[in-house]
Image 1 (spheres, rainbow, N blue to C red):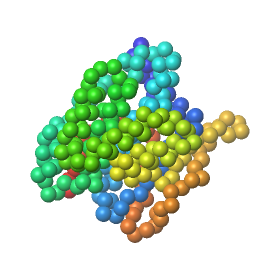
Image 2 (cartoon, rainbow, N blue to C red):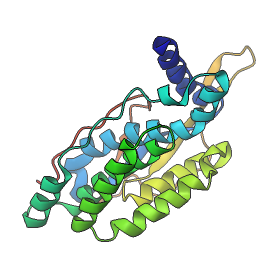
Image 3 (cartoon, helix red, strand yellow):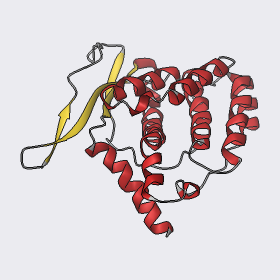
Image 4 (cartoon, rainbow, N blue to C red):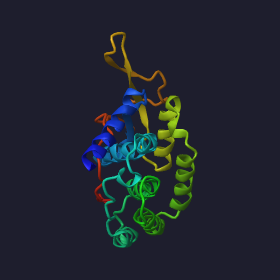
Length: 230
C-alpha cells in the first residue's frame, strides 16, 4: 500500500544515519550575507533529502516496491519566467542568494528524473535552467558539473560522503559545512553521536563570518520560492 511505501521511504532515510553516513552540523557565512542565514538554513534540509534519495532508491526497489511510488508527488515549479524577468530588472536582486536558489530549483527537478517515472521532472528542470541562465549565464556550466558529480556515484562512498556533499554545496555557492557528525553503535548497541575528526580550516571567530548550527535533520520535504532581493 502507499502507506507502507511512504513509511519505508522515511525509514530508509533514517537508515542512512545508522549506516554511518554523516550529516552536516555547522556552516559559516560571510558577515555581509548574515541577513540571509534563514534562507541558507532552508536550503540544507532540501539538499540533504534529495541527496539521500541517491542512497536509498535502489534499496526501496530491492524491497519490492514500485519505482513509480518512490516519490509521493512532483510539485509544480513557481513562475520562473516572471521571477527571471523581475530579477534582471531589479537593482535590489542579490546574486549571492539568487544563484544558489536557481541552482537548487534545477537540482530538485533534475535529480527527481532519476527517481520518478514521468516527463514532469525533466520539463521542470529544463525550464529552471532556461530561465535561471537568463539571470546567471554561468548556471549552465554549474549544472553540468552538478550532473557529473551525481552521475559519478561518489555520494555512495560513506567515508568521503561529507566531502562530496560539500563539493555540491560549493558548486551551488552555498556555504559548505565546517563540522559533521555521525552515529555509531556503542558496546551495548546504544547509538552514540560522534564528530568527524576532519574539519575545514576556517576561523569561526573571524570578524567576517558567522558560524551557525543546522537542525541536524534532512527529512524536510518540499521547497518554497524565496525572496531574492533585499
